Image 1: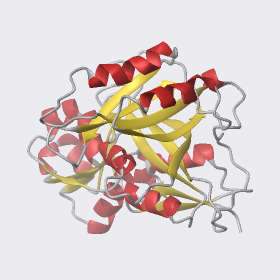
Image 2: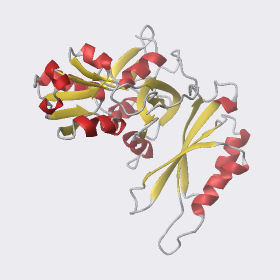
Image 3: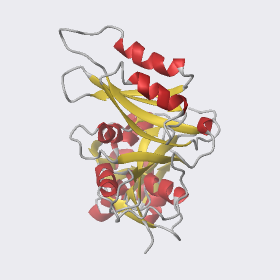
Image 4: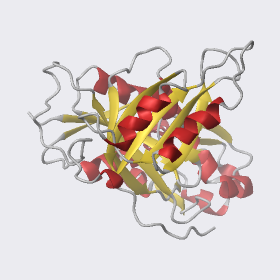
Length: 318
């Protein structure tokens, strides 16, 4: 039986495309999941070999649902690590049942899509669909599926052209995202090495784990940490002290994100991504930086190191 790979579904989602680009259907069984958390849960419990989830969009920023699952405030996904990434070009379309809508958008009363898509199509929505009621759903392909199954000519979905074909919807408008060259980055998840026999660790993979990539500079690492802080001891400069650790070890930070800590109001979990990898034998700049970081932050968690698959930069057009 081929190893299973979970992805945010249903089929024809952009996450499905990322999974297809990374895992050959000839060697893996791709299994759609309803939510991003369902993907995390399947990897955590060992029922799948890998998982694929959206992480950030080039024009609309981070997927906060994924960040919150990495933050893991309730300690449900402590064995999840990132072991790869994939980039997918995103071209949103307006899909529906009534072809006459192309000349009269006022006929659309209900609009379905993933929350991330709203921010990527702001200009089109403001110009043509400001009147329509928006409904958040788990994925863009699920939006297309719901419109197809609902059989309501006043409903439409923001989704992909592939999803429109799959669910037999009419293409009402194509390429409605604000920026051409729009891309979404997806992360590949694995379960931390355990004795769990349900995880087929011997299965072939098209993604590289930390110890498999020969050059540390060709890798990325994701980390989260919190700051030592109490109202009686605000510890000025704590964030600067933490970030300066990476500069001392010449580690190039490529992104910083924050999410609420879940412990107290206005306290945060900091996510940083940088070039380099954690070495299995404890050597190298990343391991040394982690050791020093542990002395200035409240706590930290390594979320994985993987091969950099970022494509060459493109000029974004409005």
